[in-house]
Length: 372
Image 1 (cartoon, rainbow, N blue to C red):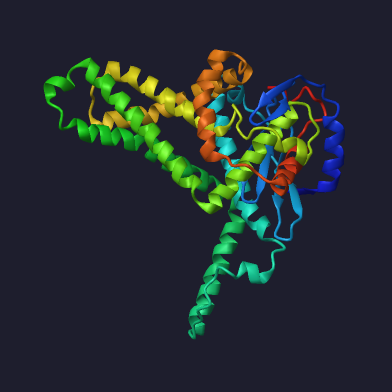
Image 2: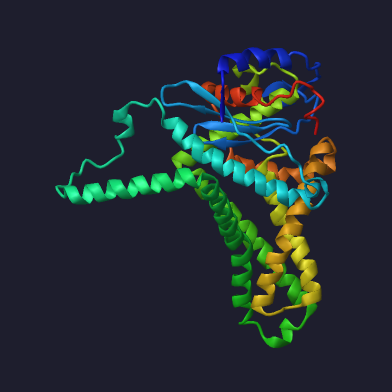
């Protein structure tokens, strides 16, 4: 990764942003902010003490180091775009997977960077003071640690990919397969004369969808209560505010960014809600034709349907992004925005500074390159 001077970014970013035209005044949240003059394709992800932004030409991450300084690194990405990445309803799955792998790597990297420059007493404060007299054991642990570090350094990309795949499998198992498994187990107690009815297949799929939404909501609520996660959510809020400020054509200053809402219609949380909502509709329609099939068939249908649902959800999110002024579209986007109450939190000035540094690093020279 190439290191970029944060000071140079601040100078360059201000000049680029001042070239954007003005906008009308709109009332949002608790303060008046300027309405968007453009919708940008630039998106981001919260990291540990940092933010990653993905622009049309560059992907960069900014992280607050332990000594208080901000380090901005460029994440090298392949400039080659495959044919399937441009095909509607197919490109969504590919882009989602690539973003997940890139985000996982950035998250791991940010954890290391955030510790740089931190005083040793702070690093060791959470460690146990217990000591052992078994010097052979210490040597063995040190040797094992060295081997592990060596393996990770030599196979870094493999580790990132496996971590991303594991995350996908856990999500699919928890939010897609488990609800269906519970429904199928419960269906064993329903008399066969009812199981043969079409309406029963529809009812079971609706119950499955409700369970899926419930599991997702419980997960978000519990995760948002964890102190470390809530810290990341503050960076997530800063990412949204910074993008909103940029879209409104205002200079990226802490004061300007802080007055924008932390909710954004094109957020990954909104995407996940669309995936879950569409899964209810699609699996219910499939259920009309397959009926109350065996447990194995139901689980296979859900696995096969995931890529199609993700592809449709991606296009739906793009449609919402283009027409977010339409009252009907705004109503459809409302649940996704509401869920961001659990995945974002209000940032402070220093956190916003990190988001600004990341954003400024990916703003294209040509203002037309990042139009949504």
